[in-house]
Each structure stands twice: as C-alpha cells, then as structure tokens.
Image (cartoon, rainbow, N blue to C red; front, side, top):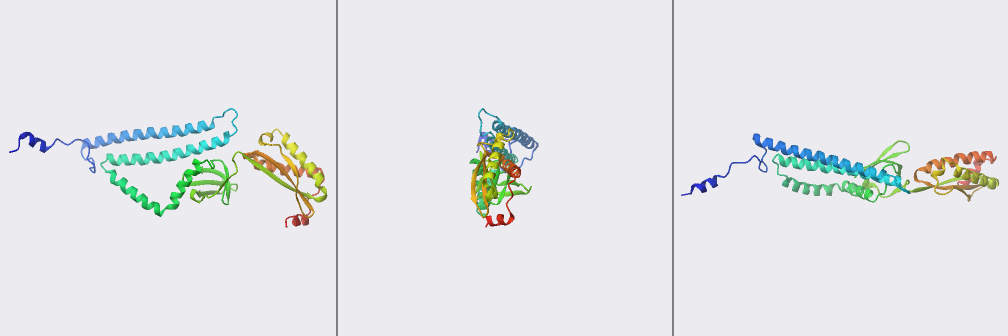
Length: 299
C-alpha cells in the first residue's frame, strides 16, 4: 500500500508556464512569457546595437582629433574610419546571430544540436570554400596590419585607384576613369600604397643636345619658383630641384625635375612641373626635340 504523501509526490507538481526544450509555447501563459522574453531580448539587442554604433563613432572622433605636432594625422584618420566600418559590420553580424539563437530558444527549439550541426556543417563548407575563408582571413590581417585604409591610393595587381570601401571579404577600388573594381581579399598578394606618408615626383624633360645648359638653368628657375609659391609650398617636404642631366640620347639630353612631397600631392606637383617647364623653355626660346631625334632617343 502506497502512502498518500508518496502518491502525491509521484503525481508531480502542476506544470509551470516555462515551455520545455523542444516544446513550442501553446498555452496563453506560455505565449505571454515568450513574448516578454522576446521583448527583453529585442530591447537588449537595440541597446547593444547603439553601443556598437557609439563605440564606432567614438573611434572615428578619436582619429579625427588633431594633436599638436601631429605629422601623421591623415593616415590616423583613415585607419580610424576603416576600423569604425569594420566594427559596425562585425558588431551587426554578431548581434543578428545571437538574437536569432536566443529567439529559437524562447520558442522552444533546442539550439544545442543546431550549434553542433552548424559546427560540422561549417567544417564541411570550409573544405569546399577555402577561397572564401582565405578572403576573410586575409581581409582581417590587411586591416590589422594597416596596409591601407579608405581614401588611400593603392595599386593592387594591374588596378590603381582610390579605396572606397573595405570589408572583411572585399576591397572596392575606384580607378581614375571611374571604373569600380571589386577585389576579393584572398586574391591580394601585393599592395603598393601610394598615399602612405610621402611620395616622390620625377619629371623628365628632353631637350636638344646643344641647349642642355640653357635648359638646365631654365628648369632650375622653375624649381625655385615652385618652392617660393605660397600655394604649393605646403606640398613640399623637401625643396624641388633640377638634378642635372639624367640621360644622354641620340641628339637629346634628359633633365630630371624631382621633389619630395606629401602623400596626396604627387599628381598635382607633377602637372605643375610639366606646365611651368614648358612655359620656361618657351620663354628661353629653347626648341622642342625634333621628331626623328625623339624616336632615336627611345630606342
């Protein structure tokens, strides 16, 4: 004979409103409880979303802050913008995955087998998509090592242009013609950064053999004129100069104008060199290189 107290124990206590694992909420109490939990999850997710955006904005502001005697402000600003973009992208993906998993648990789905299956499935996918994994790994190290940043001018393979956007998988490079190149990070084996710290401008001018001395004096005057130009002076890290005869050709000599400039001023200074060199040579009545001589000098 079973005691009454034991019988009561065997019958168990009344069920609670919390759904068991693998049990979708059916009763009104369970639905209300699930709705409250989802509300809390969404509120926390929204708060986390704004925290991610706030931290990313803070990173950008710290990068934009000008410091006394700051000689690398532009590069630091670019790195801050790139880091903020990556932080937003990664933060949004992580939040989405966490909210999705928590929502499944609230509605009675056991996520442990799902996570285990996802691990096995992910391992199988990784073998079949090694290039995709390589894209993400390479993208991480490209940014971790600050090889380039948004707004940098880079050369990747045969592509040269301005970096418009960077993700963990892709780099978007806009050429001077306006063409947008989308390059997977895994295909990047070498990067030439044309915007890092400083650049050098070399402009070669061919003149007839007999006018070399007069041309060198005229080009020396061009270099001195550009160094004294208040509009161009901030672009120079060292005074521009004409380095004398660089090369001898068949009936021509090549004189090189050179300057060490800030990272973003290379094209502008090169154009100014060419334009002012032409005006100076015309003013000195130095004839242009005859066509046959120009052909001979390039052979």
